[in-house]
Length: 328
Image 1: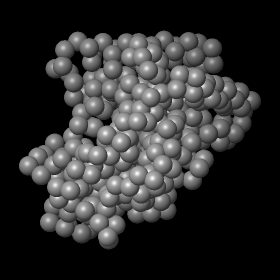
Image 2: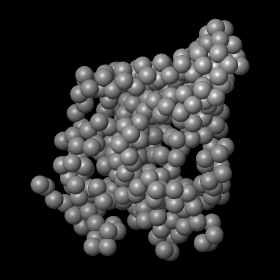
Image 3: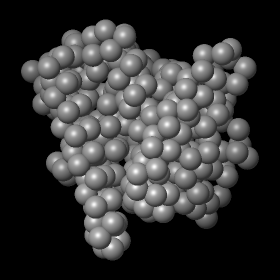
């Protein structure tokens, strides 16, 4: 068994130069897991997309029979498969779901139509997230305080993000024609699909079937993103003290979910490993934890513990931990 120290005796990040070196060493070790398996990737895509289509059809069929309650029940697992489909898009964006760039990009673009997320535009903004995670110098104070409020984050946030914000290349409007092309092409494809489905089943049926699935999946996605970096003893610093590898290892959580939820979220809870080496396909992340069990306890939070993270919305630079509004 290979061993690399990652924590101090109290379970918190050790800090200092040695800790940074350890984080960099993990990046080198984890590169051995970055090769995708083409057949496995195709199978993962099939067992995610096909059930989603079947469940969507079943939800519409139950709605057409007048059983709206049954349609809403079906929306729950359908949303789970939509979340999983987004995680495949996520891996495509990192260039790791398939070995070739072309396959990753076109699978990602097609999925982006279904997830309402312009692939090329999202890929750029997500790369910025990876390059700046845990860096306080990139956060505006007022904007940060507003959007971290739970009511905004989990109430208005998902609908605004997927239905409105991603219809324009927000944040990349001055980056040339490519973000615009990605966004407008995705919007056009979405409009065509909506038009066709509305023609066949009607606008009321489409909205009452698809919106619950989209909003449930969007809320789950926002929650996952929140918990991945919003836990009490995360690691955030300003430019002069910030280090990419240390922020990846100690600023990202290991969100240990029950097996079924791990499957639906495509192991994205192993987020500290993902940030250390984003080229690892999601289906290889559990293998990393099996081979290096010392990584299991780094930033570990359980499902029950994660609900306490809702109140942790602001970073206290003096205490070096996240605090609630009441603690200010």
